Image (cartoon, rainbow, N blue to C red; front, side):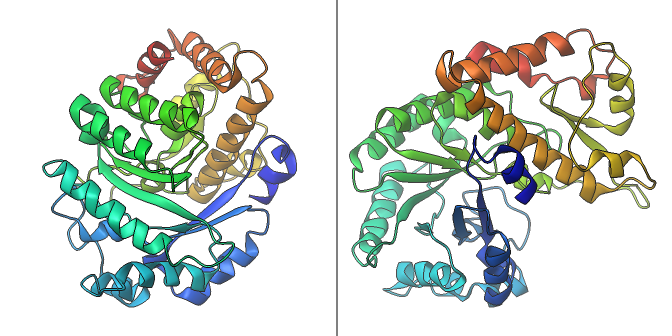
Length: 358
């Protein structure tokens, strides 16, 4: 974060998010203290872990330690439960507080929306002076890809003048780790949500969206969430997979020129193509200068280059705003990748859907 801020701090703001159920309070507070360049500090309560009937989550989505780290997950019937959730965020030093963010039920849309807003209003009424509260929503992709559900959701957001910050986590299907969505209906829903927030002066933050969240900057989103793991890049529907015993971990590399993550072998092929631009991030010399492959350095490269891409959107926004800047980057990536000697699993299929949506 410090290196991204040093090189691109004039063109982007950095925030950091911790998951309250992932560690003890002291450790999370220490992390916030170390991340001094982060203007925004969010302690995500991750109450969606309670909603395994509405979301496709792994077995035992909370786990033994999480019950200990986030005791509010066991007290949902308490009359002051929402206040407990907010107090837990205060305790670790968050400067943007979130409502609990339970998953919205697509089979009971109005009932779940009404419950969400009642709970959020109750919390808003007891906020302390100087605090900011974001409306936290967790939704299966049907809420954005289906017209009827999407219209109901957008109408509800339009009515909530008391919330100027939205924190929207969306779960969708994913074929391969780190791969963004190419679902045109879902992309269209994200676009409409971001457009609405921009038109109404609301700040839309999209956690766990990775490069799909970066795309949403074109449509009016204010920020997106990314991290070191595939789960940080995409709140994907959980699908049980059998791992082969002794199978090595995939060696992935983010190609910013392609807006795509590829296998290391594919990187070697792409690197030899005329017009390839070598990465200048601080981590690639160490990543390619030694063996074995360093997954931490590969992840840091990915994070750094997403920061650079985000800054580029601001720096190139004079013509057509952020929409024009993102469109030019996506169009350039699609042209350059066309005809590259890549296997079917390495082709950035999402670029065609993105280009069309822009």
